[in-house]
Image (cartoon, rainbow, N blue to C red; front, side, top):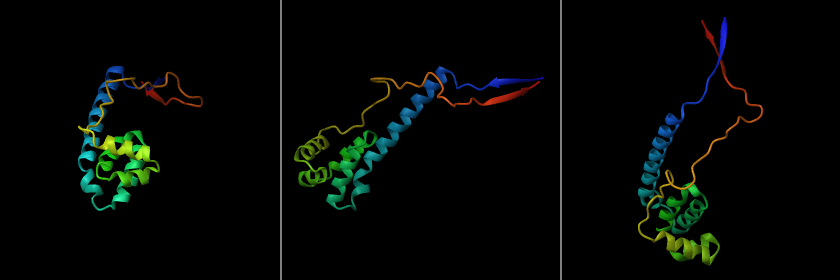
Length: 131
C-alpha cells in the first residue's frame, strides 16, 4: 500500500539560520562591491560615472554603490545627470558624508514576512512512500 507524504518547508529555526547566513553573505558581497568601485569606474568618463551613480541611487539594493560612484563625480556632472540641481546637490552631499558604510538591514526594522497560504492554482509536490 502506498501512502502519500506531503513535503513541507524546513522548520522555523532552520529558516532563521539560513536567513542570517544569507544576510551575512550579502553584506560581504555589497562591501566588496563598494570597496572596488573606484577601480571599476576609473575608465569611465565623469559624465558616465554620474549617470551610473544616478541609476544606482534609483534602486534600493544599489544605493551604497551609487553613493560610492557619486563620490567620484563633481557637483556639475551629478546635477546634469540627475536633471535637477536639488537632486544633484543632495547626491553630491550624501556621497561625501563620512563614513560611507553599508546599511545593515537584517535584524533591524520590519521583518520579512512570507505568505501564510498558497496561491490559487498551487499544487503541492506529493511523494509516494513505498512500504
